[in-house]
Image (cartoon, rainbow, N blue to C red; front, side, top):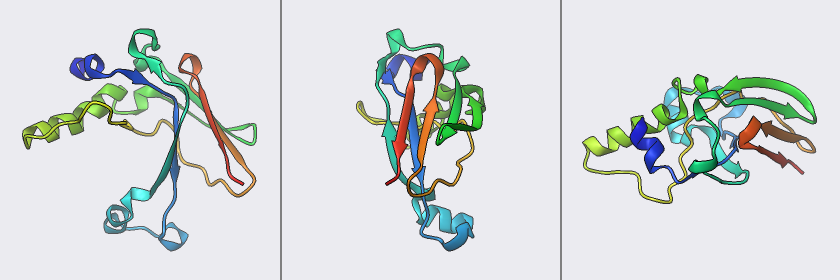
Length: 138
């Protein structure tokens, strides 16, 4: 995990946009893989160099939809620490003689549930000292 933190240049608050081509989310594990596990996009906030980043083990988030809090979470919900979640694919790739390249954007995992958001709504995630990120669906 320490190697991940040393190799990480910067971090940013982010919202993953989840979507699926599977009707009514009646999705099986095979469907999830074929559908890229529902990932439709990513919105990043401002990047913070690691030297100025808060302790990633203690980041909390509030997820708001149209200004109302719909979920909360903690970085501890991501395998105990986001760096642990990044170490897993890094170690798995290393065992195959591959690696993560500089400049790759890595999503360690979700800190909250993913609420349904419709046209005309705004989602905002507030990550304390790490910052905030928002997206509106028009």
